[in-house]
Length: 248
Image (cartoon, rainbow, N blue to C red; front, side):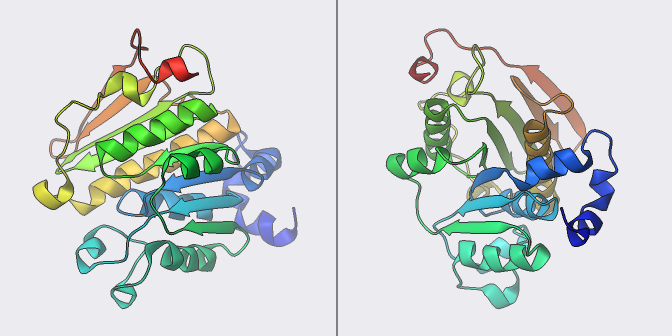
């Protein structure tokens, strides 16, 4: 680690739980971020800032005016541009020492499988149940930890699913395809700082996972009622006969 890296990451290297060895682990890690919207923006920015060495960022969309209320990776000057390409430019301006691989596409089953084979952790920052279930299944098959976040209106949630460990529940243990979870922020609205809170926590849980420090939200669902600023934590258990867990 050279002097510029030591200076850039000094404030976290000072933490005894991290130190130089922990910083090097972050530098050598690879994370897959799926979704570069309200959640993916703070996730990507914080992971880039802490020096996570390789970020694979995936989103198929272009930047729209309605995105700017909460998607802090982008500015008015970026309207109409490809999200992942613009995000790459922003993240490299923030930290030119890391590697960014942009994927401007929808993640189908084959792409998910191939990409997850080369990462250490997966972050689900998508905005619909179908995509979340597909990401979960691929993470289980690849035995990769999954950090999942979601937010709508004044409500947010975050959980960590350890497909890399035996007897841990997966996202499919919590939600089924037939559940009526089709609401989006386009229909129901969302307050911008909420995705900042949940996305920042996804980044924090990812760092803890990679470093093996503290207690993560593994097998737990943390719920936020931001309107009343109340937090709830629910313990998750593996569902008997879960069709995805059986793929392990």
